[in-house]
Amino acid sequence: MIRLTAITRTFHMGDQAVYALNNINLQIASGEYVSIMGPSGSGKSTLLNILGLLDKPDSGRYELDEKLVTDLSETEQAQIRRERIGFVFQSFHLVPRLTAAENIELPLTLSGMPSEQRQIRVEQALQAFELKQRAQHRPAELSGGQRQRVAIARATIMQPSVILADEPTGNLDHQIGAEVMSLLEDLHHRGTTLIVVTHDRELGARAHRQIGMRDGEILTDQANATG
Amino acid sequence: MRLVDTVQTSFKTVLSYRIRSLLIILAMALGVAAVVVLTALGDGARNYVINQFSSIGTNLLVVLPGRAETSGAFLGAVLGQTPRDLTLKDAQLIGRLPQVRRYAPLNVGEAELSAANRLRAVTVLGSNVHLIPIRHMVLAQGSFLAHGTENNAQIVLGAKIAREFFPRTQAIGQRVRLGDSRFLVSGVLMSQGETMGYNTDEIVIIPIGHAQVMFNTTSLFRILIEAKSHSEIEPAKQAILATVKQSHDGEEDITVITQDAILSTFNRILQALTLAVAGIAAISLIVAGILVMNVMLVAVSQRTAEIGLLKAIGASSVDIRRLFFTEAVLLSLAGAILGFLLGQFGSLMLRLTFPQLPAWPPVWASMAGITVALITGILASMLPASKAAKLDAVNALGKK
Ligand SMILES: Nc1ncnc2c1ncn2[C@@H]1O[C@H](COP(=O)(O)OP(=O)(O)OP(=O)(O)O)[C@@H](O)[C@H]1O
Ligand SMILES: [Mg+2]
Image (cartoon, rainbow over all chains, first blue to last red; front, side, top):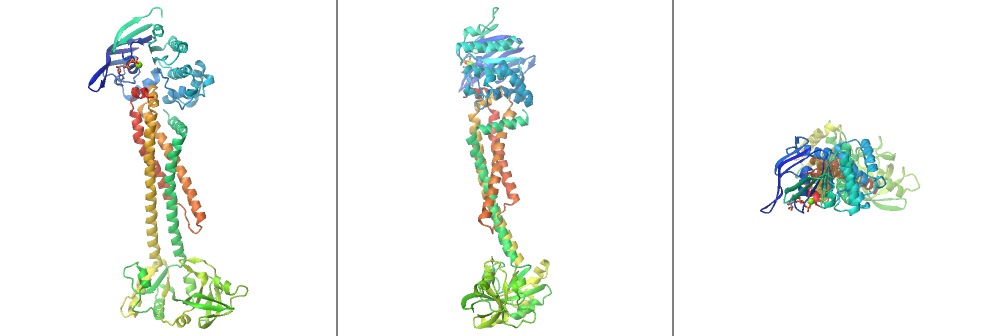
């Protein structure tokens, strides 16, 4: 359960203020599948960053599972990111030095899980995302689709309740993009809240709820019966 | 994040930036090695001098004619001419002092030694029966001024001279000519090599009376004195000064040097020198520390996107700070250990190259070198680590 109340985020460029988010009110129930669309610069990424506790709003309230998270300390926010939120990025953001398996293992390591348990979980994830053959490969040796699968495996390894994906298919061709989307949708089917920012109308239409943004404001918010 | 994982993660990072890591480790290592080797050299020199000085006698005092202008400037007394000579009578007075175990008056000169169709100039020491034990010389064969032979014209040959003159025959009992006088060889010194610039292998020793006749003098070059014990050295010195002053009509015109005082002076000087050298070497460690800081700062900006990602997947600022901190500590530690080993190796090489020099690195220096390396490494990593921890995740992720 996500509830945003009067969230505002302003950036200052010189003496000019840019309202990246302007008085956003939004409620997303657990297990929803939401797509966010809108022109470039409309505030989609900013919204996602605030939902993911990577960025702080200038004003407004953000409640996650009935708990006000806006005022939590840095360490507490890090813990929420670690345990409840999974990020998937357009440019994958894999650590180039680490193998696929090691990249997937990172969140587990950060959480303090002992090594033996980590290996079991990573093994399962490699299996689930069909990456077993690529476990010891570095990102540079993987295709775009494989890289995004590694990124999704990493985002989900902690079994978060919310997946935030910022244009996850932006760097992939259409077919691979569709495959990646169905992977994310699988997670949604298993109960994870899925929030996807996309430019692709077709992909956006697959979500059960579509939010349209413009100039830092929510313009449209419609349920999609067929999705 | 668990400590083992932090260390392991940082360790992997260190390994994956191989060249960068090697350079830092090398810089650290050279600093530590410099501290270790230079202190080994300094301390080796100190021990060398101390050993040399100790080997010339025990509880030794030396009386020389002439008054040193300032205490310690004994060179002036060595070179300066004296109003009143040091005589055998002075030596005998000193010998009666209760603090003195034994004394040896000394005259030194050059003379030509000839025997068995050979001829060469030798350094002649004139002294009494005590010279050999006081100066820690050892007779390989025979005796010098044995009881009942005190008035004989006898001579002790240095090991090398005995070998030169009597390569095949027994030297003892042979007659030699020194200057214009004839002497009977009564003993041969054990080969001892050079100590304090004296090569006892190439001297001859004759009774003091004969030496004074040969060099036509009544004044002594030195009086060597052995105090009864270590604690009697200082009282002996005072007593000697008082005694000779009295016999020299109240004029204090001699200088008494104690082996002990020279030893401790040398010890102090060489220790200070070692410390100074160690300090200079330690500066290179600080330079290495600055290098560590620089490289870690570069690493932070190179890995900005990675730091952003780590934050996005749940690393706290503390985790990030620890990762960078650990990385720098690992590098410094590796550098310190490598440097210590290099230093030990360097010292070993020094000892092999200069066998007389006991160039053992002092334990304190190795400890100090390693500690300073670690501390500089830790201090140098503070700034980069906190810079990494403070990075704004969103901006960091945006960077490539
Ligand atoms: N760090 C920043 N500093 C200054 N302005 C920023 C910053 N981040 C975002 N903005 C501004 O905030 C507004 C919203 O940016 P945001 O990245 O959320 O847009 P977006 O909808 O994700 O665009 P795109 O589709 O191009 O990714 C833009 O006008 C952008 O210029
Ligand atoms: Mg964006």
